[in-house]
Length: 264
Image (tube, rainbow, N blue to C red; front, side, top):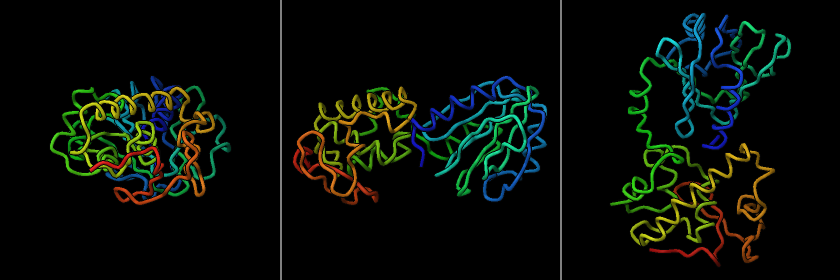
């Protein structure tokens, strides 16, 4: 599932191609399972003649704002991706639909596994409230982050993955945060002192910002990150010990048993 940095890169691609252009047409292909609160045909009708004026990322969700005050929500699933092209026969193999603009460009939405969700929203804020989306993990303040932890009794990894706490954090980035702060992902929140909680916040922010700076291109993530070593037989880039794999918060989790302290 694309996480915050990946969706941020998709936002940049969308903005570059789609903003402030009249939508001449939405070209529909195979749209079953993609549109969630509207049919493909109704979506195409609503979009004709409209313009995207801005976009807003909230965690793993991308909201594209229209000139009529409504929004299109893109939730990318495992394989959703934007592709820009000009000639109709250049469309990607698993394109579900494409926006066509007056300059001849098209912005196609490709999704091989059909796990993406597209919504047409008349009230974006109402949708966010219904989904109980927490603040964006990159935008949340330190004070709000610490306040969210108050009264929580679960694991730190469970806290980081809960989208009502933080929108945008996912499995790999949560493991990276815990490793960089030297905390076992299964550590219980009540056992973490204030200093460690602050370190988790600042570690999360730094990791997300570096990932965004690299446009979520994993090949350019630092080799000293856990990210590049979390596999069977992988070793800790800090001390060389073999990493262990376990289930924490229902997700496959890699950690170093030597340098990541289990608390609580």
